Each structure stands twice: as structure tokens, then as C-alpha cells.
Amino acid sequence: MPATRRGPRRRAPIEERFWRHVARTEACWVWTGVHRKSGAGILPVRQAGKVQRLEAARVAWELFVGPLPAGRRVWRRCRRPACVRPDHLVLGRRGQSLDTVNSETEPRLPVYRGIRPDSRRTWWTRQRVLDGLIAFHRVTGMAPTTSRNWAGLIQRIGHRQSRYPTAYAVLRHFPNFRAAWTAAGIQLRGARWAPWTVEQDRYILTQLGVQPTIAIAESLGRGEAAVRARARKLGLRVGTARGWPLQRAARTAGVSEYVLRAYIKRGELPAFKGAKHVYVDPADLRVVREIDWQNPPAELESLERLAVFV
Image (cartoon, rainbow, N blue to C red):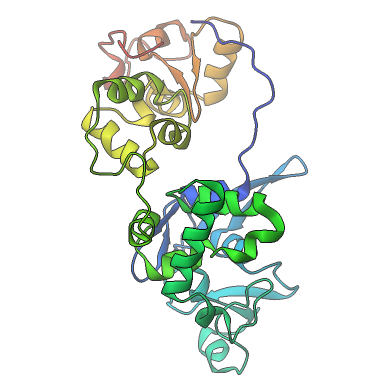
């Protein structure tokens, strides 16, 4: 189908993009996005019309702690390049070694906004976290189950947000927000053990790739990880939900992505603009004259139209 004209794409906040690529473990918070050769995570950010590749650890520091001072860099006390856990980060000077940084007298744990370094780790005890969650639920009637949703809600509350624990404080005492709400005695809507219904499966089948996964999760009252897991059981992934992503089609066909975009712009190659990818049906690639159809790639030799393409 021909590509439809859309308005300017709304860019997700940097905090939301950051959490998409973080896998929390008992030891470290591991960056699952793009990496440098050294293993350090990278988050591409567009600023003033240009794309900058920021180090994920620096983004974590600026989100949880504050601006990075001039001439300083972020080190990881755990010595794991992909780690972005705030209390594993420490500031050092360029040219310093990690051993030198760790031997200095300056605080090894980050100083969070508005909280003294000597009280930050002791104030939000497990009981105070539970009391804060109960107070939040009593006032708002909501019980968010992801750190992104929690951070966004308490930020909108404004001056009262100091009454409630940060996402980091909650996750210090509980493996996830669902466990925290359960410990607080709050019954959750759409608990993880609730069976999936036919209507929910149909919603995933029709909306995966069309809407962001987090939006699907909010509509179904489930966690984002649960939606991804259910989609895999249904034989779906975001990368193949509506055909082939444009990057995969270009790589397989051995042509530039810009060539395919030109065909889409002229209306010769049908495409579908999803939440994350621009999809094309591989059977429609026959119109691309730049592909060597005398000796086509193996994946393109016998193409049939995909039933999931819309």
C-alpha cells in the first residue's frame, strides 16, 4: 500500500528511551542497546538537528545525579563496561585510572538531587518505601508497575513528590514494582498470573508493530515484558510483525536503504509506517530495479506475499 503522509514524529523523552535498553540484574544494570567496541553502551540523541552518540553511563549519571562537571568522566566501580547502575558510577578526571579514582577521598556513591550523600541510602528503608507506595495509592488510586511510569507520575505530582520513593529506592528493596505493590497489600489489575484472553491475544496480533509496546501494555493492564513474552508465544516479534523492516530488506537485497526510501516516496514500493520500523513486504521488492534479479540473494529467490503485511 502507498505510504501515507504523517505529521512530525514525536520524539520519546530521553529517560523513556534510556529505560528501553536497561536490563536490571541483582548486581548490575546492563545496557542492552548499541555498544562501542570497548563494550560501553551508547544512546544516540538528536540535539540541534545533529545526532550525538552519548555514552549510556553518562546519560544514567545525568538522569539520576545531575549534570556532568567539565573535565570529568564517569567510571564504573564494578569494572563492567555495559553497566549503567547509578551506585556503580563514580566521577573521575580524564587521564586518571580507576584505581586512582577509588583511592581518592571523594564520595564513591553518586550524590542525588536534594538528598545528602550520608542520608540517601539510609532514609528510604523498606518500610518507608512501603508507606510511600501506600500513600501514593491512597491519593491517586494508581499502582504503576514499571519504573518509567512511576517516574513520570511522581514527576507530574510536583512539589509533593518528595513524599514518595524514587524508582531506584523501590528497586533497592524489591526485585520489581509488582513485588513492591504486593508487599504493600495493594491488589494489582491484570496481575502477571492472570490468564490471557482471546481478546487480548487478538489485540496483540493486530497492534504489535503498530503501537509502541509500552502503549499496548498500558491498554492491556500488563507489563511491557509480559506483552513481549506473550507475543513470542504467539510467534510474533516487533521486527517481523508487519513484514520486513526497511533495514533488513536493504541488507538482504544488497541495496542502499535510501534507494528503497526513494521507491516508497514515489509510491512504487508499498510500505507501512509502524511505531518502531518502516515495513515492506519482501514480495514487493520485485519493483526495485537496482536488485540483481539474474542472481538474486537466496532469501529473495522465491517470495510469497506475507499475510501479516497491512
